[in-house]
Image (cartoon, rainbow, N blue to C red; front, side, top):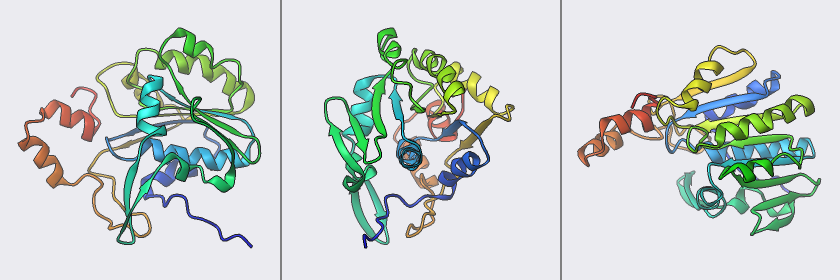
Length: 243
C-alpha cells in the first residue's frame, strides 16, 4: 500500500477558497500582500481540482518570462517542524501523479489526463491562443499587473460560464487600475469569493509552523529604515490601491 505524501500544509487563510468552492463559488479574487504565497497556494488548489475533473488548466502571468521565473523555475524555502526544505514545481506536482512534463511548454500532464500549463498574456496573439484548448480553469496571477490581463479574463470567462469551470485572480494592488475595479466589484457580488489579506492578518499557522506573522512588524520597520517609500509599503504589504 502506498503511503500518502503531504504536498502542502495549508495556513488558515489559504483554506478559505476551498470552503467557498465547496459552497458553489467559481469566481475567486484573493488580494494578498507580497510573499503571502499566492501562486503556491493556487497551485495546490489546482492540483486538487485536476484530480477531480479531467481538463486543461492554465496558470497565466502578465508575461511568459515572468511565469518561468516566478513559478516554473522558482525555488522556495519553507521551515516545517524545525527543518528547512526547498520547494520546486516538481514538488507541487509530484512525480507519482505526473505522466508527462514539458520543459519548453512549461506543462504537466497528470495520470488522469488533466493538463496544467504556464501561460503568458504578453500580447493579443498570446491571448488568442487561450481560446482553442477549452480550459476548465485559469489562475490569472498578478492580475493587476500587465495591460493584457483584463483582456485574458474577458476571453476566458465565457468559456467557464459554458463549461462550469472556475477562475481565480490572485494579486497585490498596482494602483487604481483594473485591479481595483475588479476588487470593488467582487466585494459586493455574491457570485465571487473576495478576500483581502494584509501583513496584519496572515500567520504561519500551518501544522508544524511557528504561528508567527508571515511578514513581521520588525521586517516592515526594517524596510522603512532601508528607505522604502511608505506608498510602496502600503501597497505591497497593506494592499492599498492608493499607495
